[in-house]
Image (cartoon, rainbow, N blue to C red):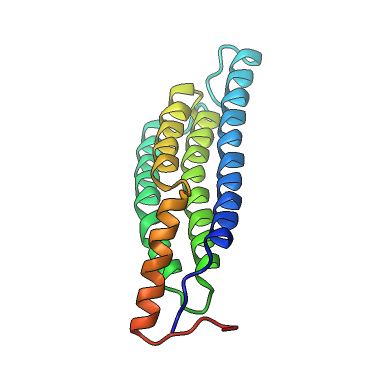
Length: 164
């Protein structure tokens, strides 16, 4: 029968996930600084690929960004269902994957800014990324609830994590 991980182990892993999330949020701020610096140094900045089909690229990246944010929950569920990993590791992996996918949305906007030269593109994508961070940022209460659910599920299927 699967046992729920101790609260302090869960809290430690959650703090690590939160620190990773914090670092990713700092990188969003650094992207914004780079965007402003590029605009200032290269004023008026029209992008590094002025002949590219910007509108088409904008729509494609917007669709990819929305799909990416939608995939976070799906991938997190798949990771949480992986009985080969201990519950704490599942929660941590799911959190990091989710946060990295949210970060990628801002990167899409940064790339679009570099190609098309519109800072608003970056800021819209960064705002979408921030929504993802708000939704998927590691919270101890949520982790405790998920750990209980994972333990219940494993007990129902009589699965024991490796090393127990």
